[in-house]
Image (cartoon, rainbow, N blue to C red; front, top):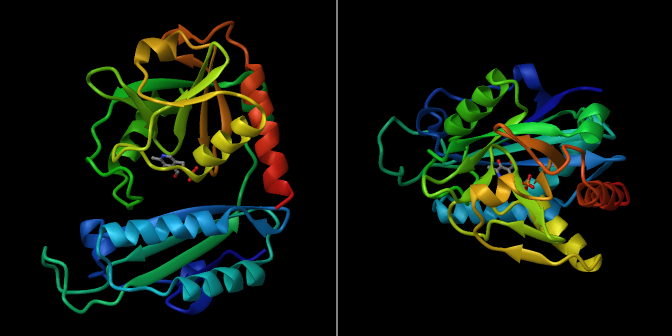
Amino acid sequence: MPELAYLNGKILPIEEATVPIEDRGYQFGDAVYEFIASYSGRMFRVNEHLARLQRSMDALEFPKVSLKEIEAGLSELFNQAGFDRAGIYIQISRGVAPRNHPFPADSKAQVVMTIRGLNEIPDEILEKGATVITLKDFRWGRCDIKTVQLLPNAMAKQKALDAGAYDCIFVTDRGIVREGTSSNAFIISGGVAVTHPLTPNILPGVTRSIIIDICARKDIAVEERFYSIDELYAADEVFLTGTTTEVMPIVRVDSYQIADGRVGQYAKLLYRALRQEAESG
Ligand SMILES: Cc1ncc(COP(=O)(O)O)c(C=O)c1O
């Protein structure tokens, strides 16, 4: 299958797609993005991802971009590439302009997309669970906007890998649990699913919202509230949710084993329900 790029309306091989060096995404991190997964030849929850993309662009007062055009480009790219299981990355920058901090008066947003095959999460992780470390959240105050300013996330992920863990969960200096480096975090405590409320400090995850809906359908109570690192360590279950993370069971956080150290029933049930929903479109 060809790995393709979409560049302002044209589709071409990824290695041939380039952007000008004065793109504001490159110089200022002045760009927003989305990542969409496909299952069985269909992109999953496109409308939700595009709505969040629009929200990110509005929050940063980007030049107007036609969502219809993006949607058409996305479909064309997906159809031409022909993957069943793919990851589609969309990045929109404020545009190209001589380097200067203020927003340029008349820049044109640059729209870039790529498509590549997406690997499944290894069975071993789903069966045995993964481990995470926690780190003080040192990101900016608008993590609800999905910008490409991901250096703290990349640093935290690398720190986790260096420590032999799968990922890192950000925690405030007062011990409030926020989210993973590219996922939202949930705990199960006494049969209740608990996750951080939607505030400027976390991303409103598409998967987070799907999981909350699935919980409602399965009569699992959900509390969107602040919870502490002590509650995280003492939880019956911990899992991360995200487009590529799906529902990832976590069996160890820092030096603490979660419950009996095995993947819990809620994580298994929610993973299966998510996959079912994704595969049936
Ligand atoms: C910081 C952060 N939180 C949460 C998520 C999960 O969001 P979604 O479920 O929409 O993929 C992501 C996904 O990239 C993320 O980067």
